[in-house]
Image (cartoon, rainbow, N blue to C red):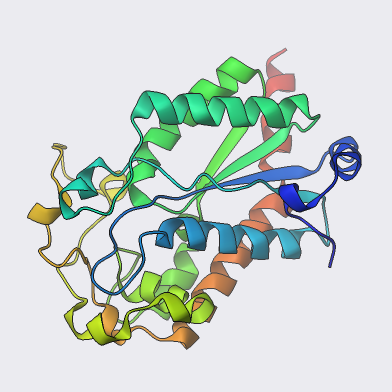
Length: 261
C-alpha cells in the first residue's frame, strides 16, 4: 500500500501527488472528557483512523493524502468536567484557514475536512463556506459518522447513531486502542440518550454544559460495546468516506460553476 500520510511523505512526493490532483483529507477531532473509561483523545484518534482507512481504500482509484490531524476543536460544553482543551471559534477558523491555505499553496485543489466531534459540526458547516470564499477553492466537509450513518445504525444495539463515550465510540476504541480503555470503569459508563445539536429538530437552541446532561460524562451505553462492533463501524465509515472521494463531489461543483458562466 502506498504511503498516504502527509508528514511521512517527502516534499517531492507531495509535489507529484499535487500534480496528479490528489484529494487531501484533513481530520479534525477534539481533546475532551469521555467519561470514566475513555481517554480524552477519542475524537481525534477515531477521525484519524477512519481517514487513514478511507485513504487506503480510495487510493486504488485516486491519489489521496491525509494531513496531520487537528486534535483540538470546540469543546466549551465539556469544560466543567476538567481534562478538556478547547478553541474559540475565531481560533478554529484561523487555524483551518492557514492549514487549507498551505495545502492549496502546495498545489492541491481538493480538500475534505473530516470531522470526528459532534460539537464541531455546526461551526464546520459555516466555516467551510467561509473558507471556500476566502481561499477561492471549494472546501468540502463531512463527519465520518455522518458519511457512515447506515453502518452506524446497522451495527449498534442500544442507539441509532453516535452519542458520546457511548456504545459506538467505545467499540471503535476497543477495536484499535484497547490498551487505552479503563475497563474497570465500564460498569459506570452509561448515561442518557442524546441527539447531536447539529441533528436536533428542536425549534430553539440554547448552550448547555454537558454536566447538566449527564453526571457520568457519558451519553449512551458503553456497557454493550465490543471490538467486533468497533471494527464493523470503522470499516463501514471508512468505506462510505472512500466512496465519497471516488464519486468526486468537487467535479459536481466545477460543473455547476461552469454552467453559470
